Image (tube, rainbow, N blue to C red):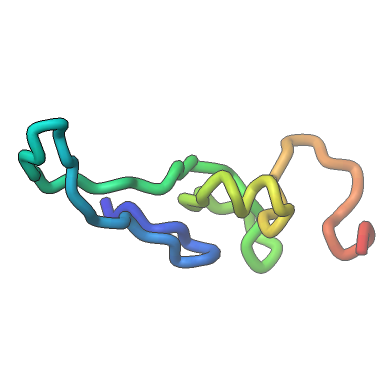
Length: 74
């Protein structure tokens, strides 16, 4: 599975670990991705989303027994 956010396209960043002795080894920073059941085109679907998109409200989470639809809330 690719470590990519399905909303914003955030991907891993690459760089180096640098020790005190200046030894350099490769490393990568992965985005904080979560699997969330969300409404995509009105259909509940499991999507992989970064936490910054969740916090920003870019994803409308699907909750069981929801009384209102997302169109009614806008």
